[in-house]
View 1: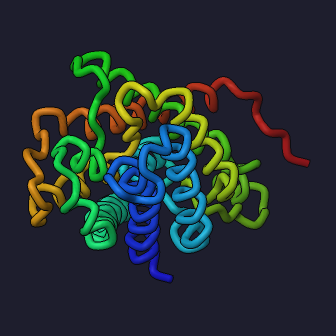
View 2: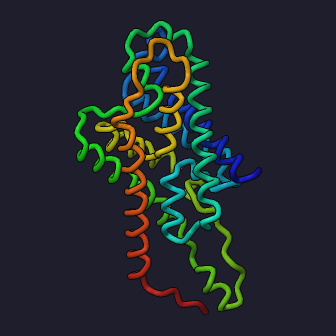
Length: 261
């Protein structure tokens, strides 16, 4: 599969299951109404698991501009791929939100709370304060991206392989390199432990794509799309990804050199 198509489909699946579980819990008259935060975090984790499982072999399953930027900043992704990956992720997130609106249309019609409807598209902070909200997104995303970088470190570098006449290590870098189940558990842990303040966007595409869908699509009695907050789940994850890359490079620089036979 083309890696850009894989990123589009993987991010679509992520939003289909992630925003789908939020809609199932939040919107009225669903079978899962009021099931609670544990169901939401587990649904998001399973969405990540399924998306990575489906497209990890094709693209590394970044599914997240923060992961893409973090890998690029750590020297693990070519610059030529960054824009294409991010564009595919944004389009996939938008398309996933469209499918959720269609799937739960009757329940959107039955819902009289615009804030609940917005929450099925994008994140809303529990307590709205700029610096704490931004800090939460930075910390949670740093955990995510640093785990990806640490888990995908090959035993030898490309340069070391060439110098010693060995076959170059082959590794698709991204969430897929962690393995589908471990990355799902990682996102579950982030949601359970760090998600209660901002809704743990940890992914600019996951928030911005569906927020754009909310603004553009004819959501019944939808209210505003909260653009005054929208920069935080973009800037916070991107800063977290750069911090994770810097920490990774620092760890790598202080690690013992690999001695090859």
